[in-house]
Length: 412
Length: 145
Image 1 (tube, each protein chain N blue to C red):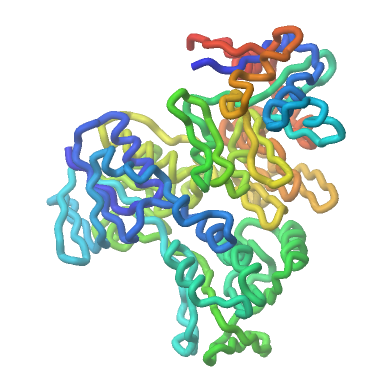
Image 2: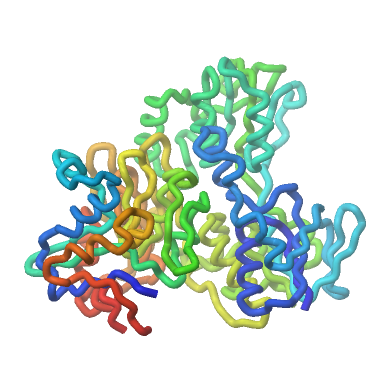
């Protein structure tokens, strides 16, 4: 059996684990665009901040590929031929596969912006090489302008604050983290970030650039030394689409991580799969899902039969001590009932539909939140116990003694 | 593998396990110096309500969700099956806390993650919570599954 994996991130190495849990001998080729062993992408901001060392960001020990008998090819795939079962690289090289897994992740999205070509020091922020490049462009006096107040832009701001003179973040949306937070929660986070020294210009973005000056939509100007473009990402799926594979906004997979094309699987940030909290397919570009999805794909490629049938979005993020966690579906647009618990600089919101917890959002008091996540992932029937007793202080008390004897007492 | 198991019918709710855990992981030889007037951050905690008490600590799951969610590679499973944390790698994102179904991951004042490592990395060498449990409600044993 000849396995080919396109991409070399967490989903790819989890796929290798999955394959090797069943097939110890099959040939595995990994096609990697970046010239690094698989690394934990979220660490690129912690690297800038000095919390992670470059030698510590790899997903696996340095002998991982060798131990697992993987050949790593540096290159970029431009086409798949599903009939001859080959992939073609930019270099023209062709590689044949029996089973293929696409773990290509996503790329920064940069819309056309007038005058962007006149900006000398401009960067996107998605790879460790971006971190190295930004690092070499900044001085302790640099004025950094970050366009985009999403997760990537704000983590970049956190990573840079202590290494530069000033950091300003702008976003066309009127609030920070607009894709995951509502107005009220976003206001708490923004206030905290402002107290930590980040300046914001929201509901506003660069209209055009003239060298190191951004002319903003509202007519104001922002002078900067370094520009970071963090406007979002797009999944890397072009060659799969061209091969006739089914895509929505990303590659559509079933619970076994199989795509619409025979012998082709996909996992990680480039897929759209069924979200049980939402009841439909969507992109859930988050590390736990990449790991679980990658492994699921690998096992199935090697002839096993497992499903990843409880995917939900799950996110934990913190900025200078303020933590926030979200899971499932928590925008209150699907007729869910909301239960809210507020403290000083702390908000918990739970969304309940058909007697199930379908999602939550927590700012501040995140202690033991996994107990809530578990209810979302398992679609636990809330009529069987007193959920309200968990709202302030998540614990295992409301669950039956039998349940606890099993989970804590080792009784099976 | 041997794990820490809790028999809630024997748990007195005395919280001694929390103090023994904090002491064992303090690196300080004297219990008074280790704990007196300090806010303790044990890796085991007692939950209680009415007549029910029981302690909760890491289950060292077969397929740990905390590791699947760890963004830094700090959480790994060692050859014995113990889920361990490398504090040099942990960046305190708390993804593990978001994922642990038992609510048994905590943090210290430095915001890196603390979890039960079965006292394998401290001088105790065997779970201090078990050794100090006055009613043998917490045991360290192999259970056939």
